[in-house]
View 1 (cartoon, rainbow, N blue to C red):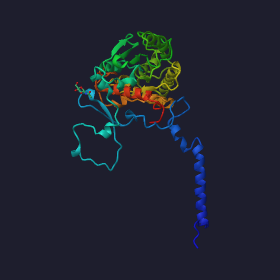
View 2: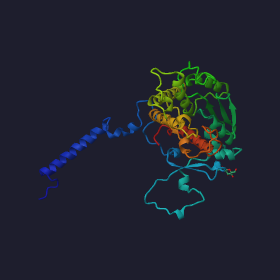
View 3: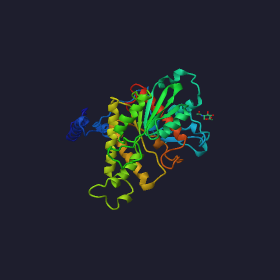
View 4: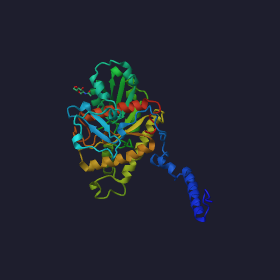
Length: 386
Ligand SMILES: *[C@@H]1O[C@H](CO)[C@@H](O)[C@H](O)[C@H]1NC(C)=O
């Protein structure tokens, strides 16, 4: 008779191995080094992160801007038609002949369903709001950008808002009356950490640290314009002024031991300089969560855009501090606003350094702002995992 479970010595060894593997897999699940903690490896929980590892409810629209895709617009003049098209899932079975390409640029409904709404273009077209209910979600909302005057002012013009400036290199805001939306920009001198530094941009107004500027300049200005609420979305950018500050600092305040003779010719920054930027950036995120007393304040960081001015290795240096910043964001639960990433290759620069002229960039900026504002306002959609 054939036994249903063979019990020969050879089979016994096999059963033993299977049993032992099962036991060790079971224990690895609960172990720090086990594979169940792969998620926490990519998103360390040691620093305060409000993100949970729970998948987003199906009511939350998946984020098209976090996916690979292509920026499209029919011509430089028709920048109001700009879209970010996430690539449909690739399958090696899907074969297409070059002769089958649709050159009209029309987007099929399945792809269209994954795109962000063209709200910037709509607000540009609709002088009057016909259907109030469509825009109800935006009423009375506040978005604050740190260091983004150029983009906010351009967007403001396109969506028929009114800009008010608090002075050059101070800040200001845009109010769109017909939807009662306010978009503020604050101007800071990067992440400078010492108010006693007279030689740093001495022609600029003080204070120079973000802590003192927020407390003494931005918040009082918001109060006097009666827009001092907790922001519904905050987007931080701090790269270009930092690049200049980190570069100039050891020349203005020589270190001990002295700078190596060839220091100026180094094409990029040193690790310690990047780590300084990371530590100050995390101070800024913490500071903002604290002043609004909101650990889950919807915070984003606007990643770098390619500049055309490459003086003093300025291209590489921006990329380097941007790399460090992305790590800080991941550790601290700050989402990234990938405007600069998505614009890669669009090379019409306004001042040859960091400002873009009105164009595809403006509509991308607007549609991303509206998308993330809506996400921040949709219950359960900000802190879940996309
Ligand atoms: C872009 O602008 C043109 C010209 O004003 C207009 O005809 C077109 O409808 C606009 N496109 C969108 C998406 O609003």
